[in-house]
Image (cartoon, rainbow, N blue to C red):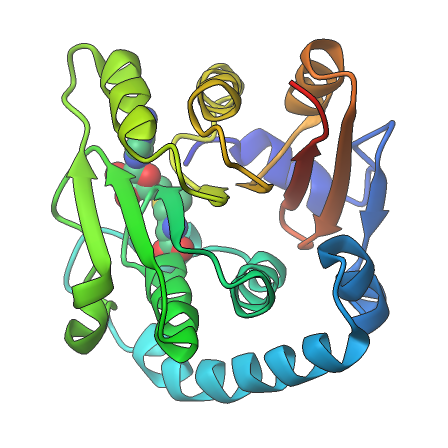
Length: 238
Ligand SMILES: C[S@@+](CC[C@H](N)C(=O)[O-])C[C@H]1O[C@@H](n2cnc3c(N)ncnc32)[C@H](O)[C@@H]1O
């Protein structure tokens, strides 16, 4: 949500992030994913083929008219969607945490990957329970939705994260304002003590600078999703 100014600048072709490696769609090879995820290319090829099959079946639902508020403009980018599915297939996490459900593209995608692994839970955090119309009912046994109150939102998020400190993958797709993204990232690093992979939809220079200022030993890889950038972040020491 927000960041429209940023999206327009990307579309006008202005390169917008410095100090990080940016990969456009043609660069999203199995080799790149294998390097990022420290996996074999065979594992990646198989996981991505599975994602493609899943996505074909999901596409019809995504394109159908929606009943709730959240339109397709809010959906997770295609690059991050494929990456997070692949990451779950390869890393086989016991727990994943995400912020921002909306219609549920990211949620349904991650639940499908966990279901395919026959292992793991997803905890999603939002500010409203009027979300998730695209989520397959049959997969909700692996899912918990936590609603943040309006008052004391940051403190509540910290509490939820602390309760889920064993999560190893985190996906941010909630409030994309730089101020909230920075707060969320700092809380994730502080509270999710087992975290391996931090994924952020819609990153900008302010967040990148914040990461390198506060977590000097970090790796940041950026997927150029055309209308926005997605960040794959590893905090190496904290
Ligand atoms: C960009 S949409 C999420 C899209 C979703 N991940 C998908 O792929 O379909 C943003 C969502 O974040 C929620 N949200 C906004 N501010 C939030 C906050 N501070 N914490 C958690 N969720 C928030 C909104 O209610 C909305 O559901």
